Length: 206
Image (cartoon, rainbow, N blue to C red):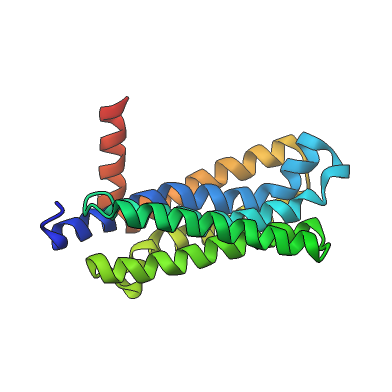
């Protein structure tokens, strides 16, 4: 597709839609059940780690988006760009951690540095996607909107189930089950075509 930019762009947009449709509910679902999950699996003394889960989940959003958009780079032969961009990303992370260690900041702030690094990498990814394949930011927002909105609704319901009914294995199982049902329902109702296509492809793999 490298000589057909519109076709390549369309393939990248599909990749973004599919990747976020699978990844975003997992990330937001984890955030929604983080506290009861840690309490049950690791006991209450590990509850401070819940904040780390939240921060790394935010970093995960930007990481997933960046990686799904990056799928255009190899087909257009930007090998030097890949090397340079990867070096920049790693240097940025090391620099943020180094600054944090020099300033002797809290571990939580070091993890925030990882989220900042992923955000910066995402912003650069968006910029170069526009330059190379004319993939605009408003198109990216449009492509991730279904997965984002459905996941947020699911996450809110799952979170408040825990708030209302407390922490137990039964409640945690109910939260996970309800989250899956809610997310599937919204996709079947409002995003049916893409959702069924993903299921069809998964069946072919299995």
